[in-house]
Length: 247
Image (cartoon, rainbow, N blue to C red):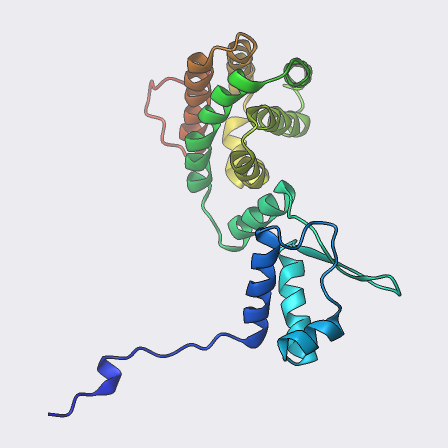
């Protein structure tokens, strides 16, 4: 009996030569064998060492540059210098994913509900006096901005990001930075900018800030959860009649 090969073997995908070189160089950087501030071998040397064409080498370097692992300097003393991607590049990548894939507002708000209470807990645990002073100063500005929706929206974002920074959790900070602007700019935001709801938001921030000031981790978590959950419900128009609004 003859067995049909196409039922047993899936298509074989051969990676591009430039991708293989990019992977090898990436591993050397990630493992610390090529340290930040060092220069990769010159393009000519990479061609000789890898046996690849100049085009493939250039394509590999473009991949690493797009990932924030190298920066290219031109000129006689230039070359490809190794760098490490910062939190900003991670946040930018996630934000681009959110914007280009049409991620729905309700998904973004669910992400906030999952992340921000933990950020508040960690902020209560780790915040410095300087970070607390920053949060309090922003809160004073927030309280004074309730009659100016445009200013209110920006300061609201600043305050939540200040809490994220005080958490000292880099991955969660990057995620928060990535989703905050799309949430702020979403059309549905108009549902949570009535004078009454802005006043309730000020109260919510006040009690969250007190918990962080007192280093009360459980209270910070619970009050932030109540705040962002209420925000989600109102923004997505899922609050049942008589349900508790954020405070």
